[in-house]
Image (cartoon, one colour):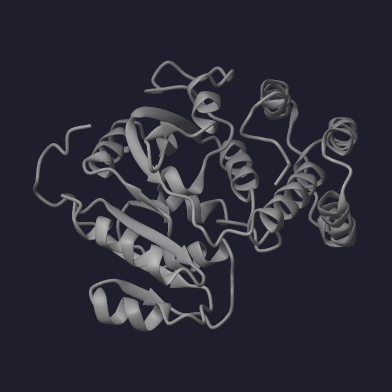
Length: 304
């Protein structure tokens, strides 16, 4: 993708959350600093103990650094968005970065589509530049959307590869604190759709992802399965929720991480049931369509 115009673009703020990944975060901030759009960058440091905050202050003094003093997980993005003054916010992980020109193009798309809450980019895995397995799922989304959508309609998004309308994000409540981290986007996406917003995928937007060597894949798997169960119980009507729960428990490996995820999900059942708010029939049809399409997706295996 061509970087396009080299002048700054003040429509989008980039928000990054991080925890104990100083070296990778500094690489990402260096790449964001060189973007032709020159976006403002806000970093929420989720209680790192490796000198992350000090390094950001020294190497990138123009970055707005938030230090809440504890690990907020995805809610660290909510904290940052409170201070966003631009109409759009681009999320970015500490091990990913936006392609030059993509933030400008995302701003153009959102400007042209006032009913659009979020646009998700194509994700290239580095080193090598191959498509992330989830790209095929985004590209071939089975959902039908209005004719004005510039790409496929989506039922969810990837936070590290998405530009959102800041007011829509805030209006839907941001990321739910109960989920903390791991598949937290699905609940927010459903609440955006329930409010009448649309989500889309844009092939010409690019995000690069070089997975952190410090990633705890087993813990991420536990959180992903736990949060999928919680989302199911929070938003799906009774019969689809029971069916989806049974399918998940049959699908996942019979091992200790799956058992831990299930135990954590059951432990959270009291607060989940208190906050349960099932979607209506039209949105449930969309969720059921997505569920069927994702059943054999390579990007949704609860293994690791």
